[in-house]
Image (cartoon, rainbow, N blue to C red; front, side, top):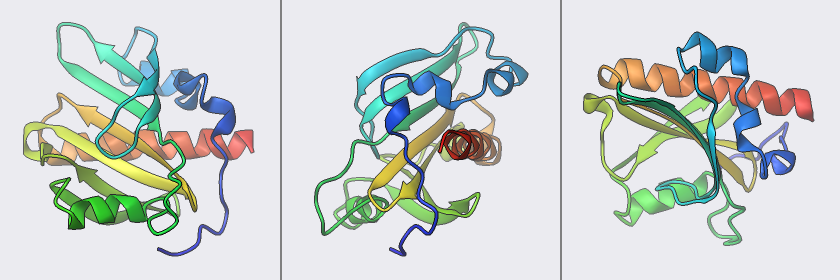
Length: 161
């Protein structure tokens, strides 16, 4: 994996992951309830502090999860996502980029046709976060929304650096 030229540090958000997404964005997406923090979240691609925004009764959800620093030097950062795919532990890992940062659409199962899309984004050589959207209409809508959430997280991290 290429070295991250302008690394971002998410450390200050580990105790408050809901602050990664600007309230204006969650509200513009019709998430009127505040995000729910889980400090020890378990995710398919990354595990660590997370925030979930839910639309009760509608089944729509967006989430942001900060990855715990991966201490395996052979698969740092986003390389771990592709290693999981090679080992058959996740269904897909498709490279992309978000705001100039390497990323991959990746998840344990391919729920994109059913409206669930997960996106892992490397913001430092050993720091990855995931943005997920579910309950939307198909791959296009859910993946576009996951990417929009990821872009907002990167902007928040840039402003906090």
